[in-house]
Image (cartoon, rainbow, N blue to C red; front, side, top):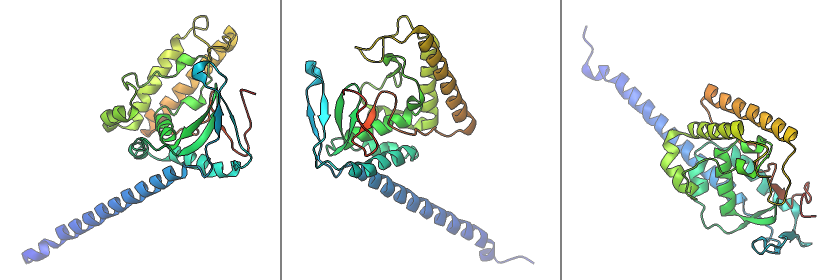
Length: 257
């Protein structure tokens, strides 16, 4: 017995309906993700006023921040947590982060070679860069030349570089960055590598070599994880060995005392 033609078409119609439902669910998921990321970026804007920066490092002065009495350190906690959450977002966050050019709202302050205030725009760029160079906070700083190795062809614009390379996927780009860092750590020499700061002394050779070997071990382990899983490695923090969040309830001055 032959079935009517319209009955034979039912399975195909059901599949089309199910496929449409999947597409609509994906669209809703994309909208929800975009809304969540934009909300997190908005949380990067501190409720505090930017503290005064005294001195100018470009003129050779010691550049420091003195927080006023009405600066509420507890209001920096949502900013700090938003940074952590944005670092944990998948690579879909990269375009949204890099789109926030010119957002001059105060976000947070850092304490490193100099004290500095960071805008939302700058914070977004830092987070995007750290998503690409997710290994950096886990390395010992043995020389200032270990930074800026990748991407070599960015020409100062991470946004343009990402736009031209994102189709290759964040995991692939992270692997390339790791390869550049591994090559550097394999060849860097304690006798010629400049210190982490222009006014600092070089590390003793034994200490330099020990930290370099530890860095190589870390870099190779992270690379192995990315290759084995096919997923990007997630940076854990913007805080690292040469830059600290400043003005949080649980942090004090680290440098420029």
